[in-house]
Image 1 (cartoon, helix red, strand yellow):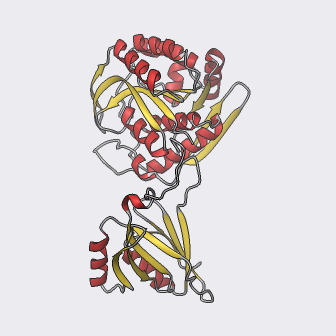
Image 2: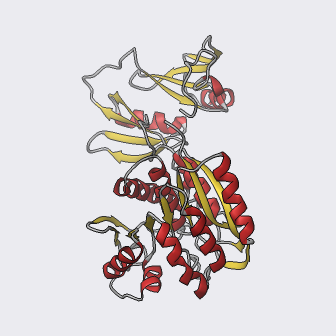
Image 3: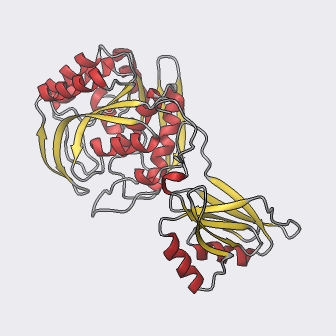
Length: 391
């Protein structure tokens, strides 16, 4: 599949939580290539915005032209535009592009700091005219339309600008949240539970750029939004807890949870002693995330987000043709530490003809387990089959 090329037109967040930084992280983790046209530079952290410097509009336009003329664009995400003058010129330039455009009408940062004055908000109409989708939160929707009723306000924008509108319900009170996609002749809604975290800085940017990625990959609006919502929720779960205020999301930890194709991210092995199996895999360094002793089932998470599980069945024997492989860059040191702690290995680290270095052991049920280090040789051995460019 061709790598989706997503042009991000937005401001820079020095704290790395929102803006271009959130967009680039999101698009990169989903498998796209992010290009950028910086509209403003901000001095910003989890507590607020301390300073804003708008980039001259001619430089914003030059960035867009530079990207379009060489790299090309499959979708556009617009965030903070910096000024009314810039908004009008961006809209005029994007009118010539026949690609999906997602406009996140950024007005106020998560901390409450203003990022758009009244003339800039008034110029948003031109951007909505060229947008495929507009993604306002509830306060933004009210400011754009003057309507108290969210659906009525969204329908007003749809009628006036011929764009779809995603109403984001994150500002609602309570644990139950709902987002709604409002189109000319259809409303699609999604429900979910609020995730208890203060790390919400950049949520809107992340959602909009994820939607742009999926639209650029060829998905329809509703499927793109559904997948993007999952990415945001996983990034909220994985937030690293940085800063003293509204911290950034954990886009860097969402690797196996969203994407365009098949992902091998879960395997299960059978054992005959629950306690011994759990102790073994915890000792290897996996994080246990499910402990169902009643059902004799446990699940573990690796550092990259892939999971493996154990199920207990005393009547089943391990399959000698199946092995679990856990890659680690500190193979020799890790094996030495485990051996010193009493974990028995059938053999220590050995270089193999297929360019991997492996150590072999067995879990308490007799399942074969390898700790290994492959580097480039796992995905890019010298004998790798040729693939199409961009695949």
